[in-house]
Image (cartoon, rainbow, N blue to C red):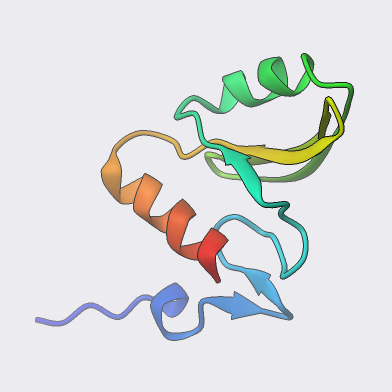
Length: 92
């Protein structure tokens, strides 16, 4: 038995990553990755500037600035497989 995932064969569509729904250039150099999606908005509320960039399944992303540093926060959901997906797609 074999399993083929469409996201594994084609990890992006239209330049947007399959799970995190972000494209090249959306993410600044500093990224915070909490597990719980509800924590992302709470973290971003502490920044000087913030805006929600993406929301798909357990991957919620905000970008913004804190003390002139550009940063992002994206939730990973539960477990190391979900974190691995977020990290791989961020790296792309």
